[in-house]
Image 1 (cartoon, rainbow, N blue to C red):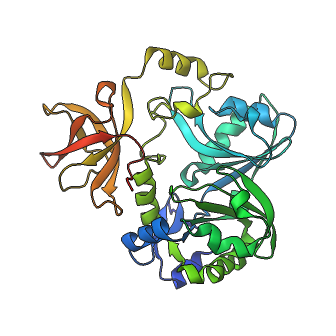
Image 2 (image 1 turned 180 degrees about the vertical axis):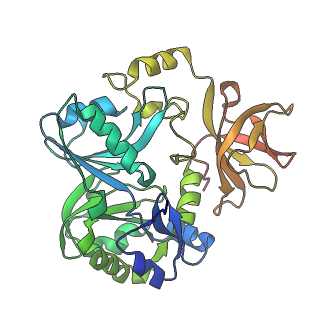
Image 3 (image 1 turned 120 degrees about the vertical axis):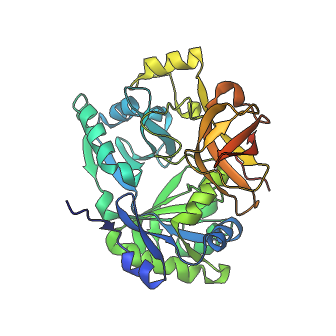
Length: 365
């Protein structure tokens, strides 16, 4: 069976910019344009733009929209106001996570869910299955929407000339729907996956190239750069943000993953009774961040051991922090080893590299 990789709207633009294209989550995506280090630095210090149009977008509308969202999502969307977004997850019936996502309240009885690219079909089927009991109006608009993440401390100044909306007035995890770069109804969201500040812009595919070019024209004085998935991964790891498929998946509980803050037991949702019981009894393992005390890279699936060399867990994500120049990572460990300051080690090719559990974010200024 031949497998076809999908192309995002600006695929040709990225190739012309010298982007190294690789298959990722079923899409042909730019992993880097120059070097991961240079691109990472651009976002931390100035401004960079990710084309993350592979992400999925679902519209949920009607009188039963909120009821459906409340049932399939772990967080409580009932107190969202129009123009506000919320991080959440879709719990499954076995105690794991179907996906993590962002819920946008576009209006009364009108919401948008933004899901991971690799899970678009899975999430769509999951939500539709449970919608049989609610009857909300669902629409998958993923193939018609492009998404640009303009990230970095100078992001606001770089793109402010493109809209009459005062970007400084959009609070974190809030958004505005406004004209941007001469294009109407762009969702300008103060969100991102880098910890560097900035905005995410949702535009229709037919307007994508116009908006992309306008962003780069406006950002010239700030040395704005296109950024690939390589730097996206190192940026999110410095912040300790979970990546679905690595740090969270169908078998990881949101409570184990440190996502208790988005798991609200003020309402009934899928598997809420079992998760509530897990919270009361305590989890057996926890996702922690760690920094290496010696040279080395902690890669996914490497064993984590205690000071006696006994296996106590497993690495889920690891890299060398471009900002700090040391090895960092995330992994699950037995709960008693999850306290910040605990000494652990990462087993790399039969050698144990010393490390320490650290409170998130891992990035230290």
